[in-house]
Length: 631
Image 1 (tube, helix red, strand yellow):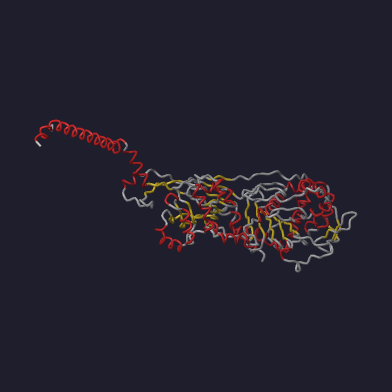
Image 2: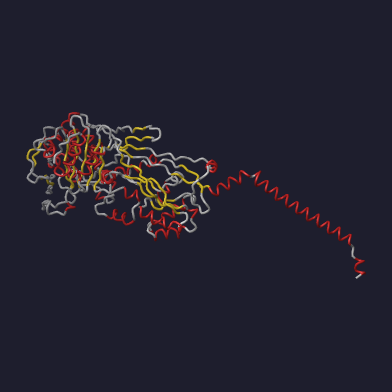
């Protein structure tokens, strides 16, 4: 032990120990310096950066959808407005399993299972921090039911929103249109940034064609959330002051229509649920005063979010309530084209004011045995142009058409706008058909079918055969007759207005090419005959026009739905309802200073004079301020 003690070097051990102590102190000091330096960097140098990031962890940006513009009639009465309602929304970044969440919501019947794929598409296309609408309008029962289940659905909540409401529902559905949930097709054509937080867009009518004006631009707001992502109330002014500024949304423009709501209601009620359409127009501006298609539907169902079953019922309804007959329906115009044909015949010399034909109830082309029958089997007797229009003598126009020819007939009807879109400012308009030799060659592939036959001209002279027109085209043509050849493009929108500034932009009438009739006396001749239709001694619609305190002009028409064989008689009572003739009527008033032109069609109504003319009379009485309409 003494030897070992003598060998041990206490001095060296002391130096090693002190060196280790110094090294440990240096290392500790260095580490402390690094920590202090890092704290200085975090709390002093990079304070603003990390403070902003910390704020971002509890502050979320939410899109604020704009208030959709109102739609009003020409007198400022509301046709489409916005009402508060609760919407069910989902914020994707707060939902761990979107598929499971949507499935469970469907099981609770809060959303439709068939909507899941559409909702997933919306989620995939938008920013994950922005809410996606799952259900547009929740009932009180649904709100209460979800409130109980809400803890099971993080990232899903109901919020107060504005939804579209149409006070007059079916009466204005086809003119105003409706809004519906964004579809995949909508997402492809619309700007995603502009539709942040918006779950609906215009689907038809003015709502669709003027979507860019009505929608507005979204804003955004900063909200404080808790650790679970739920929005919390800001309680201190200091925290409120630390939030970045919000951007307010820009509301959509208010759109004024030329529609007169009183006239629209009268037209809708006058049709009485029958399949048909009514179009009323201002002859001197092209403004549409009424645009009705019947039967109709309730656009509020789309705005509130209908079920798949409800939508399928509408689509499968044999009455086709979703089909806009006024703009898209094409029908044989029947005898309503006779005034236009008369002008063409006078202008080309195919007839004159002294020519008389003897109507024996039928007409045959030379060297043929086929009989083209008049609507009156016993015939009308001697007929001049005036009487032929007033009494709607088919035989007179059969004869005139042979001299006129299909090319002249096509040329003049084309000037009245038949067979071509009017260019109305709502989508989906059909062109109809104004047949000609060229049209037939372009339409049929078989060379033997491309030949035009004289018999086809005869049939075209009473608005049958290949000829098809929309009620809108017939109303525009009636307006052109009223103005003696001056034409304006029909339009529904009269103005739009900035709701913030009150600045209003008016839609000016668009003048089209006039009808080329050199002799102005011909206009008065034809219009006088149309006046006799309603207020003459033997006019086809004298029962409707007699007693009116103003002068009116019109023309009735019936259009065959199917062809009656030569040896058969048309018996209305024996024919299935949907095979009966369509009833048509065009008119304008007052004759000396026209203010309104109307076209009416009632599908399978059989008689234009008995069924369609009273509808036109009721509309003109309303517009001209006559209270004692015929019963």
